[in-house]
Image (cartoon, rainbow, N blue to C red; front, side, top):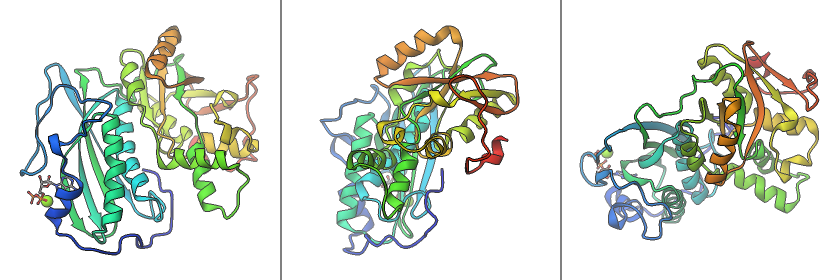
Length: 352
Ligand code: ADP
Ligand code: MG
């Protein structure tokens, strides 16, 4: 995952009361009913978890006709998140970035494990963290089935398990010349939020600032959209490291293809739209942590894409197309090539 902060210092919030390891697990991570609150909006598929927290292993029964989708993401304090990030935002984001990987495969979340290293067992921090974590888990019907807890520098490692119909996972190697390129939601808000948190002063209104910081701290994994795009998207991945870099991975996996991106079609929120053009392009093209889906689909499938997006309740934008070239070319709304010399994209060399 993307590096968002260079300073590594101890998480100062974690000073405090010591509870034993097993009491800590029981108090903050074991829930009645094997893991979900009664108010959970999304019930998990009638499955799957035969045995949850407490034994040597959890037991999961995959349904006939489905494959397991499995992904792991680690969050390290000072590297993937600012050390003063609130505990509940951190709980939410730790799971959300993992669910985003399931979404990018078109998978339905089932369960997750949590490996946690904590400097100290601070009840306030643990309460906030588990609240944010389970809020995200319940939203997507994903049950905590086990993990590991140890003392050490703050480090959160989650493994998610999901299911896709056999052969139905949407891989990143299926893009073909002529396919449209689409993205969900808006791009660049998380980069704007990181900039706002780091800058002593910024030119955002309070509403714009709140929107950008929420995009950074509480990304929305596009699970329903990923599932709705089964059989429609030819290739898909989630945007964690910036559009140009991540799209580059898709192009390479699909056989060294090229792409044309219309920068005037990039979806920008009300918070980013007002900024100067260089900042908008930098944030939307190279900013990390968006956790939106980027996918390709045949041009004949445009109405099917729009229908899937409407079903999922997530906006999508068509931002370009795949071609047989070997690079990503940027054009403006009139199709004119963009001169990039004055832009300072991080990682720009990758796409030259
Ligand atoms: P073991 O010694 O067999 O590895 P542990 O003592 O580490 O087991 O953990 C006891 C039980 O608690 C196991 O079922 C494990 O999966 C679960 N567990 C430990 N830490 C966590 C956590 N942070 N979240 C959820 N479950 C956990
Ligand atoms: Mg253990």
